[in-house]
Image 1 (cartoon, helix red, strand yellow):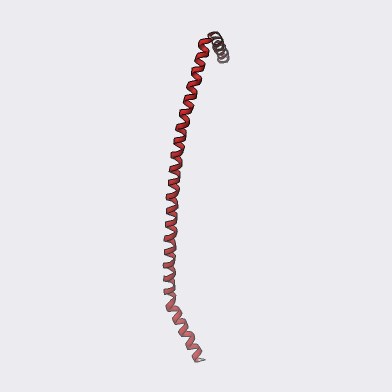
Image 2 (image 1 turned 90 degrees about the horizontal axis):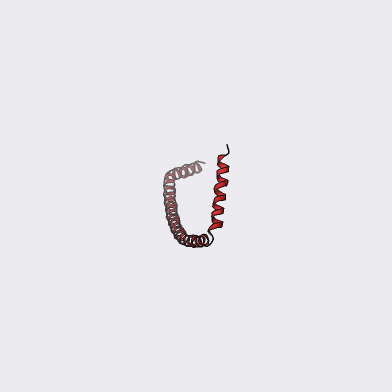
Length: 110
């Protein structure tokens, strides 16, 4: 029984000596994993920012191009409307007079 007790005591002493070393090794492994995760998150954030910037630039280009197209169409419609007014001034005057009369009647009501 004395030898079994001595073996147990020796095993406990060895275990207590190797426990801090094992903890230090685990801490080192955890630090490496945290550094790896931190780097991956940083890379992802950088890529996401780059994607957002590229999308914003593409959207700005598209809006600019669409603005030019809309501007041309508005100019064309204004030109057509101007021709119609020049060719038929009486109906335009009647419509404008009617709008003025209706707005006066509506806004004079209390």
